[in-house]
Image (cartoon, rainbow, N blue to C red; front, side, top):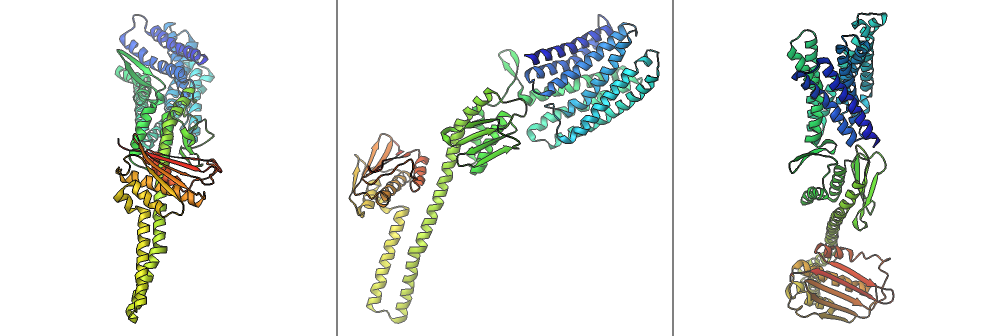
Length: 575
């Protein structure tokens, strides 16, 4: 509330000074050119008030207001001096000083501190200090020149003349340096920022051209030079700032239309849906997990306009977008305990409760994206591990048997090979064939492709050392499903049975296969020793659980020490 009052007070001083000073100078009725001058001069206080009220923590709005106050007081002083017949010497002193402050601030600091009221980097500090010293010197010199203009020269007027000339010249040099720096910032800026800086470059260039035109007019040029000069010096920079704010949504400001009304909208940020829509296009490109998390962090940073944003996973992995230069200003956990979203401070202003709600809403779908990407990564890892297992089995088993078989055949050919050697080679070949079939069954059992899920499970359990009962629901023996579904359910049941024999020391195992609605269900129950699911890792079933999740299904384990284990797996199937 205090910032609104201060901004309103400063804007009122500037506006009253502009209107009163201009009308005092021209009198009433004022010519149309004077009204045009008033409108152009009111752009700065109006724009400064708007930014200071809506963005009080951003210094740029207050800079525009201070510049506008200097302009208003300068115009008021000039009007009083003219209206009093050059008798109000103090008014001339005020006018000369305020005009110097206005033109210096408008030419140096308004372009230099664009768009947030901060220096582009620390390297610009000397330029800012030199510019401030030049402007103050120019203003002080103009104040000391007042008696000379009133026909009352003193010793100080000589000093004032030197100070005014030197200060004005130095201010011009600094203004040109700032303009060149602004052009460099425009050329080096990101594509999304280049349009903003382009308008400021155009406005600053027009501002310098306006000063040149005013100088030509003051040294005897045509009146048109004065009109061009006033238009450029008064209206170019405010117009450029206004266009940059609205056209490029700088500082989250844009123009909106509601019905027949034209509205200026603040606090513009993309909705959660818009962020997810952009992020969805990224998912379609199937990036690597680290790249995906980096783009998610960048999306969060862009949505909230923070200096940096990070995605931290539950395993400690962390990806940062932007330059992390301090502790997180906002941390929101991701859905399902998968990690958290972290944000640094906003580039301007502070994070609000609305920002927290926005990030919390974004954390829900972000968790799904992280979970999906993690699932995909684990599936790839599981496939790679399975490929290495098959390669190892071939190398250590069948390949060695084939090498031995070939060596035996070479020996038989060289020695003439008696019946006993040929019988041994025949048996060795049969064993190799059996091992190949068993290996193939581990990849994709032939019974699964020929007879279906129930037949493959029964064949798998027929050679086990403990009694296994397989119960098939109605119509299950004749039912066929996709290769992905049958393969996932078969290997899940096989792994559960293997675990019951290897770890649980089960005496009996019961398997139930059924179809319930749109779900294919498999249950494996054993009477083994059981375990505590909360403290026991299930490394063998984890890849299978991921495989079921990828198909839209689920794997559930119920177990208790001394009371056996019950595994339930299901996947959706067509009705």
